[in-house]
Length: 519
Ligand code: MLC
Ligand code: AMP
Image: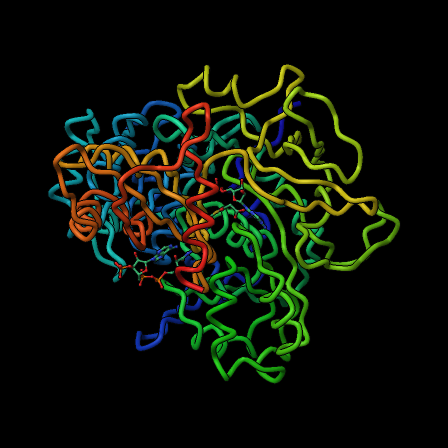
């Protein structure tokens, strides 16, 4: 007997509703014309794009690197890549040339897709790295990708895949060294999506408001797979707009966002019980949701946000319950400040630095196992080995505890990481850039509380002898090199950095010193 096709797209396609002419996606950006896409449109467009990719005679496992603004067509390109059996490699639109150069050199994609306005510099980088095909795709339904796909057949047989075959590479930075590409398989993604469909009670008639970027796990996998696997319509926003999302709520049932999106909606007087009357579920994740936001949302809307926890390497790991969870004595409470229970199929344990399991309630490193956990980092076997324990558990780099009721709380991170508005900023990377600037001896980037982004980076810099580096000039220099969300919000030049007796910079002291800068 032949094994069923494990291609994630096959499962998503099988979930399309019977009425293929029903609306699958409706665009909802303020001031823009409303466009609707039927399920048939999704099927045909992904077939045409998949046929275009197939016509390029790419090697098995070819990477399709994509740095384009969010659009329905960009989402279709992701689905087409799955459909054709290649590997999707999404890149944040904020990345600048040095960042893109690294990803392309490292991943060696066979195809690069970029915005027409960036074609000059992106194609130069791609051709230099040996990429043969560079297409353009803009957020107004133009670009060479669509022009070429328009000539392709709208019939396509979904490529045959095994569960372990790679579906996507998501780059995530490390505390030292360059970004690592987390390799996610069709099996990783489908098992997670199918389990969440059940755990979050997706039901017929659900409608999702999709307002997140689609180059990271939250928007690309959790939100998109959730809606598609349920055959649910999506309202599609290219860019998050709090007023627009609130205005859509009476016609929708599910919303997913990073905490900053909730903070921004709470600042809107239009957010009230009437606006959310048809909503079933609000989900938050990617960064800690402050208890203040959780409570204020409850008071204003009567809804309790369901917070969950995940990462690029694993997709979703834990979630507060949507309904009574029989595994945990039927508990159904969504507890603010916690990230809920390990999801069905996910095993989670807490260990100390010596690798000893810690008892309930004690704080240590969170380790996980499950069908959702990635196979490793692209072409980095040593890094992969470092991040797994000898008995096969993945070390998340998050620090937390599990209480006697089974709820997981994240209390910090062993990895030096700042999460700003749901985007990850790795201090080591930014410090490396600052240290290369003229007049700079050394630097430390620390995360401090911020009312909008939750946490933002602040740089503390020391001068070389005789030099007087200027804080504003440092920020300006970084802006020309790094993605905008990585730029420190403030920079201070000081005589020296605080150090402990071992000579290590005491970032905790710097954090403490600057903690009230924005609050
Ligand atoms: C924008 N800016 C940020 C920022 N986003 N600064 C710090 N952190 C951020 N996240 C800065 C820009 O540099 C710019 O500064 C100014 O804010 C305005 O830029 P903008 O582009 O107009 O911002 P805006 O569109 O308002 O974006 C804010 C946002 C966006 C919150 C909507 O950051 C966002 O979509 N975040 C979601 C990220 C996400 O999806 N994460 C999921 C990761 S998956 P200046 O100085 O140039 O004016 C993951 C796993 C899991 O973590 O568990 O889900
Ligand atoms: P990324 O590598 O971009 O996928 O980011 C993953 C990291 O985001 C995790 O390792 C956590 O540190 C953090 N994260 C995700 N969800 C939550 C959450 N609900 N609360 C706290 N941190 C979170």
